[in-house]
Length: 467
Image 1 (cartoon, rainbow, N blue to C red):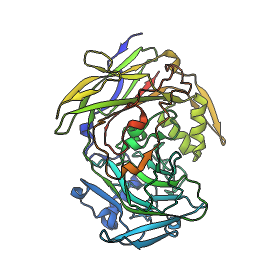
Image 2: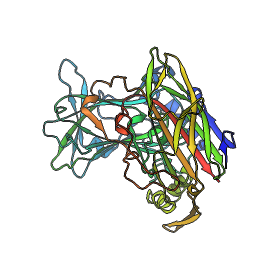
Image 3: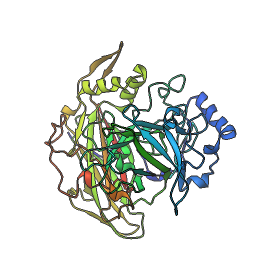
Image 4: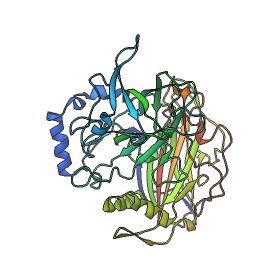
């Protein structure tokens, strides 16, 4: 066994390439949809490229509750039926939506009427835009069940579409395959004191700490894999997690995806490699860049997940048109995650450990992301049967998510009333998958709960395929 620094079979994508990229992998019908939307689309397609540079307004409710159609994103018709438009108090003014949430209606979906459409650019063609934060304002009444000191009461969930994924939407654009196995969760609660006030919520990729079928893994940007997080977004879901008895009003306003200054950037930000399972290490050269005009110090959170590949999960999801299929597949191969398989090392190979990385304004830190592999990580081939279909799969993919953030960066105003649930990747209690070390909690200040959900941090995703 040796150290792998060569490419083997590799796919490396520099962060600098993630700007205004158009992917032409869509099927012809979808391309026609995107072409027609330019000429026949409604207000959502009237944005110029320059307008996309800083913000993409999803809903401001000045013209009522937007209802989803082929050319306009909005809420489902059934969601709009439980909403009313009200005037905001002076001096702010303007209009907002009040949704009347009940035990039989606790989900609000924001999307196009077909699944083949991206929320941010308004077309069926994938195009990467420099927008990196979801923001909205909300308000709850006194005594609202969304106020809690310990339990999650509200979820903001994302659904992403990979270019050319024919499973999403199926033949009619409305099948049960909602995403390309790219489904992120940001679960949170409002703290006491938030009652009766408008609270501005800002959610960067750091807020999305959970991903469907990726257990004990802090996903963040890894939710969308190689793709840009918000550029690949096709649907949002608000889920009221609180126990709602009587009708509970939830006021929402100013939904947008905006551009915030990143505190750090990884170069590259995505690497895929295929290596023999006998390799002892896989080292990925990386650069941590401080793009700002002041010196910063960074802390890093790294978690990994070992399971079957996203493509195999997505194939099962699409062929069965049921989320139960990828669940069965991941369970059969024993997919799970945790800490300790990957770590950062400096240019000399010394592990960074729990030491902050200082980088001058406009400066760079060079090092490696080191993956420690074990032969037992590669699992046997198994056959999974689900609803008359079957798939031959194995545990052969190690996915790692790296987040570098600045603990000195102030949180956005309003976020003091929000607590986003931590990842369970660092609970230090679960039994890890084969080849992972015993799990231990990171020291205080370095845990998933310490990563600011509103800060646009540096993100690096690696996918190591074992053979």
